[in-house]
Amino acid sequence: MPAHIRKTVVASLCLALCADLAQAAVYTDAKHLPSASYDFVIVGAGTAGNVLASRLTEEGKYSVLVIEAGVTNEGVRNVEVPFLAPQNLPNSSVTWNYTTVPQTFLNDRYIGYTRGRLLGGSSSINFLGWTRGSNEEYDRWANLTGDEGWAWNNLAPYYFKTSHLAPSADHHDPEGQANLTNFGNGPLAVSLPGFPTELDPLVINTTHTNPEFPFALDVNAGDSIGIGYIQSTIGNGARCSSAIGYLSPALGRQNLDVLIHNTVTRLISTGPDQGKPTFKTVEFSTGPTATRHTVSAKREVILSAGSVGTPQILMLSGIGSKTSLSKVGIKSTVDLPDVGQNLHDHPILSNYWTVTSNETYDDIIRNATNFNRTLAQWQQTRTGLFTNSPLNTLGFLRIPGNDSIWKNFTDPSAGPESGHFEFLFGNGYNPAPVPATGNYLTIGTAIVSPHSVGQITLASNDPFAFPLIDPAFFSSPFDQLAMLYAIKAARRFAETAPWDGFVIERFGPVGTAETDEEIMAAARGAARSIYHPTSTARMSPLNATWGVTDPQLRVKHVSGLRIVDASTFPSIPAVHPQAAVYTLAERAADLIKAAWA
Ligand SMILES: Cc1cc2nc3c(=O)[nH]c(=O)nc-3n(C[C@H](O)[C@H](O)[C@H](O)COP(=O)(O)OP(=O)(O)OC[C@H]3O[C@@H](n4cnc5c(N)ncnc54)[C@H](O)[C@@H]3O)c2cc1C
Ligand SMILES: *[C@@H]1O[C@H](CO)[C@@H](O)[C@H](O)[C@H]1NC(C)=O
Ligand SMILES: *[C@@H]1O[C@H](CO)[C@@H](O)[C@H](O)[C@H]1NC(C)=O
Ligand SMILES: *[C@@H]1O[C@H](CO)[C@@H](O)[C@H](O)[C@H]1NC(C)=O
Ligand SMILES: *[C@@H]1O[C@H](CO)[C@@H](O)[C@H](O)[C@H]1NC(C)=O
Ligand SMILES: *[C@@H]1O[C@H](CO)[C@@H](O)[C@H](O)[C@H]1NC(C)=O
Ligand SMILES: *[C@@H]1O[C@H](CO)[C@@H](O)[C@H](O)[C@H]1NC(C)=O
Ligand SMILES: *[C@@H]1O[C@H](CO)[C@@H](O)[C@H](O)[C@H]1NC(C)=O
Ligand SMILES: *[C@@H]1O[C@H](CO)[C@@H](O)[C@H](O)[C@H]1NC(C)=O
Ligand SMILES: *[C@@H]1O[C@H](CO)[C@@H](O)[C@H](O)[C@H]1NC(C)=O
Ligand SMILES: *[C@@H]1O[C@H](CO)[C@@H](O)[C@H](O)[C@H]1NC(C)=O
Ligand SMILES: *[C@@H]1O[C@H](CO)[C@@H](O)[C@H](O)[C@H]1NC(C)=O
Image (cartoon, rainbow, N blue to C red; front, side, top):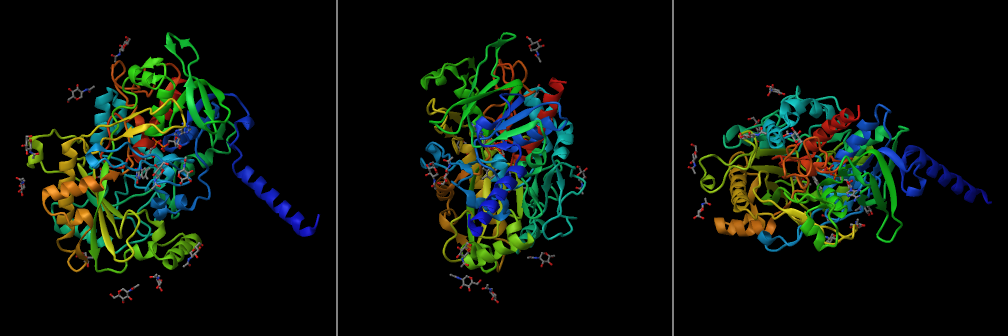
């Protein structure tokens, strides 16, 4: 063999070996799995699934297999670079490319409903915001489930177990930008923005001059109302997902195997256990026409496939509403009508202004020279704009108690320390595509305490067909009126001092709408999902006839099956949900360990 070819062969052999060693326990082919039976089989290596994979294997007592439909998280640029997270949307090699059914109250539009389809799940593609939710959110969970274990005080140790305050990429002093006593010592890196923008002092100064918009030192310390600096799951300038924080450090363990590229198609009922059907066999495959394989759990199967995947797998397994399953030719083994119901999500839209500044990120995103320079800086030194999440500041606010909206609607929030709507501040045009010219300010307005309730149902009994996703955005007029309130509040925010000389004028269809009717019409044309679906397999009290799991997250009327992910939330928190998912999963790990102790 000529020397240059021999060298290439050796080099690629080494590459293959090194890749193998780095991922000793990650398999792509079911045939190579060392076992057909594990103590626990976790479906979905997502946000919650990886917490369980790590915690259930840490003592070495149990064997665990995680089955993930998606790909590895390693080496995916737009996953690693925090600022480029939006570039995975709506469809990319690391996503489930879902869309909603036509949204009746949004001019019959189909809305993108992307979820992460890779190790880390949606924590690998989300916008990294770390917001815990108010104390009232968790106390409401305790109330809705009849289990004090979900209350704020009792969950706090689990919250602190998830994460720690990491240095920002620019190593600035975090004092005054967060409550430094309110951080724990868990594996996730959480940090303040790593690169200041000109917007930050404008936003913060407004909170000091306009009492309608109070400053919040830290929305994660109990009271979530107010505007301040965002905390993000970023460490060393790069994304810290559940794959980075929880799964990677556990991959060397002998008792953990991970199978990627394989979609779970259903759970198979394996006969009764104490009068209840058991679902301890998991069926999966690499594609619609590929061989179906099975693996079994000695103790439990745990569904962590997320708010879309979990109800879909339940229904494919015959766990769901008997009548709706019969419509797609599935025999219901367990009649649980709440499966797929109670879908809650936060609608969002962008409010734009043109600005006098030429330092917004518009000229970086649309100009390849600037983009490449900023990316090179990130690659070489992990500094600069690309170490930031897409926003540096945000805030949660309430519609005042004397507003006329309360004549017609009850308050959907968990209490006075929980928001009705949110502001998200972008120092440029968001979302893409950025217009060819101009510099922009974006204030995203989101309804975080929605009254609208949607559902997920099966389109067919084909496990590779997308389910029908209907968040029913704006189906409650409350959500429309709350959005109107939020848009007008954003205008009050950005069209007063200290913004004079910065803001030029409102821009776009929402921006140029003037009357309430015009603003609402524009909102119906612009609202989309902020990607926070929850509660499609919600928890309820032990003997409640509604709900899908009990407060210990065990599926009702079934043996050997638990759910641990955002689908079990009894109500949607009025914040970005990933911190609540991690916290729930940390408690779930202890519940599972206690059940088998
Ligand atoms: C674009 C985007 C931006 C977001 N921004 C933020 C933010 O800034 N802050 C925040 O707090 N939250 C944010 N969120 C929401 C947050 O990321 C989610 O609420 C959270 O990650 C959900 O965790 P989970 O464990 O329930 O599901 P996921 O993390 O989605 O995990 C589910 C896993 O199961 C896998 N799976 C599904 N079906 C199957 C199957 N049949 N077989 C095998 N595997 C399967 C999936 O591929 C995935 O890996 C965002 C979400 C998105 C999509
Ligand atoms: C999602 O869309 C992207 C871009 O078109 C594609 O590469 C990817 O394969 C799609 N994902 C799935 C699961 O079909
Ligand atoms: C994303 O993929 C879905 C499913 O294939 C498709 O319906 C949708 O049009 C795609 N969106 C874009 C913007 O390409
Ligand atoms: C929940 O709160 C309501 C109203 O305060 C109360 O009536 C109910 O008993 C509470 N339920 C539980 C399980 O604590
Ligand atoms: C920080 O948070 C703790 C609760 O975690 C609270 O007791 C304390 O008052 C907060 N400090 C400030 C300065 O807000
Ligand atoms: C914000 O307020 C501080 C203190 O009053 C002032 O020094 C600074 O110039 C202001 N910044 C902006 C951008 O308005
Ligand atoms: C931005 O504007 C300032 C003057 O306002 C000018 O000095 C500077 O060169 C401009 N920068 C760019 C990148 O256009
Ligand atoms: C892109 O930015 C560079 C400066 O960084 C500038 O020289 C170039 O003209 C810009 N290109 C376009 C198309 O605006
Ligand atoms: C930017 O980088 C990409 C990828 O490396 C390259 O294809 C492109 O030519 C570069 N563009 C400029 C203007 O430097
Ligand atoms: C509500 O109360 C505030 C403060 O007292 C007042 O400024 C505002 O005008 C009132 N709004 C309505 C709709 O009555
Ligand atoms: C409340 O409902 C009544 C009757 O439907 C309607 O006339 C009124 O405009 C509504 N008020 C608000 C603030 O939505
Ligand atoms: C639930 O039902 C079981 C069996 O009927 C009973 O023993 C238990 O006390 C009930 N628990 C609650 C919280 O009502």
